[in-house]
Image (cartoon, rainbow, N blue to C red; front, side):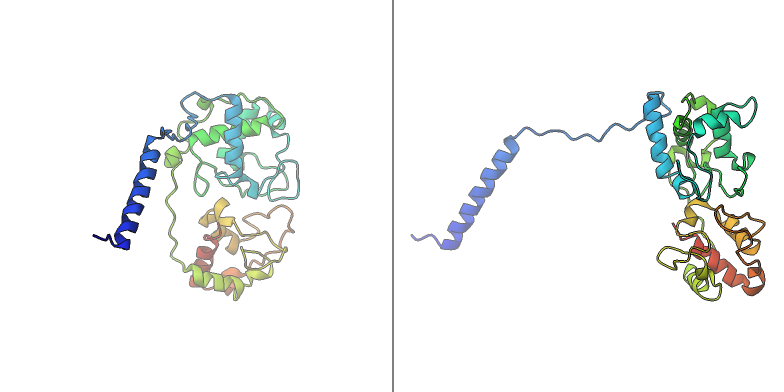
Amino acid sequence: MRVPVAVKVGAFALFVMGTYTYYANSIPQIQSKPPAELSLEGGNVTPAQLVKAGEETFKTKGTCEICHRIGQKGTRAPDLAGIGSRAGKVKAGQSAKAYIIESLLQPGAHLVEGYPNIMPQVDKPPIALNRSEVWALTAFLESLGGTVDVKLDDIPKTVGAGAAGGGATAELKLPGDAKAGEAIFTGKGGCIACHKAGKIGASPVGPDLSQIAKIQTPDYLMRKILDPAGAGTVAGFPKGVMPPMFGQTLTAKDYMDLVAFLMTLK
C-alpha cells in the first residue's frame, strides 16, 4: 500500500518538531529575575547610591534640567555648580542641606537676585516628587561641591504625601479646548511671534515653551498671560517684552483654550 506524499511530509514535520521540543525541554532553564529595586526608605542605601538616584531624579522626573544647568549660565534658573558648598553660606545658622531642602519645598524662600519666583514646589504637581526622591535629590545637590550628610529624617514626613510610592499624579482637566488653543497660539494670540512650542515656531524672543507643562501649573500660566510683569521675568530675557494686553484682546474662551493648549506641552 502506497503512503501518500502529503502524509509522509506531515509525519516528517511532526518528527522534526518533536525532536526539537525534546532537546529544548532537556536544557536546564535559567530563572530570570528583575533587578532588585533600590529601597531608599528602607535604609539599605549608601551615600553613593543615594547621589546616583538623586542625579537620575534631577535629569528625569524632577525635570530640573529644563531650567537649571550645572556649570553653565544663561538659563531660566541659577547655575547649580558648587551649590553643595555655597548653600551653607547663604543664611547664617542654616546648614547646606537645610537650605537645599527649603529651596526645593518652598522655592520662594530663597530667591536669587535676577531670577523671578517661578519655580514650583517639587513635591507638588506638576513635578510631584515623593519623599524618597526629595531625599535623593537633596543628596545629589549636596554632592555638587559639598558633603552628603542628609538623612531621610531631615525630609518632612508630609513631603510628597499626594505622590506616595512615586505614582503618577492625576491629570488636571481644564475646561478649554487645546486644539482651539493651538490656533490661538499661532494666530489671534500672536504667541508664535516670540515663543517656540514643540514643532511650532522657532523665535528666540521669548522662552521656549515646549516643556512648560512639566514645570509650571495652570495657575502660573493664567497669571503670566494676564499679568506678565507681575508673574516675573524669565532670566535671560528682557523685562516688559511680553505684551500686557491679552486680558483685553482675548475672550474668556480664547484664554481658557490657550491655557489648555499650553498644558499639553510636555
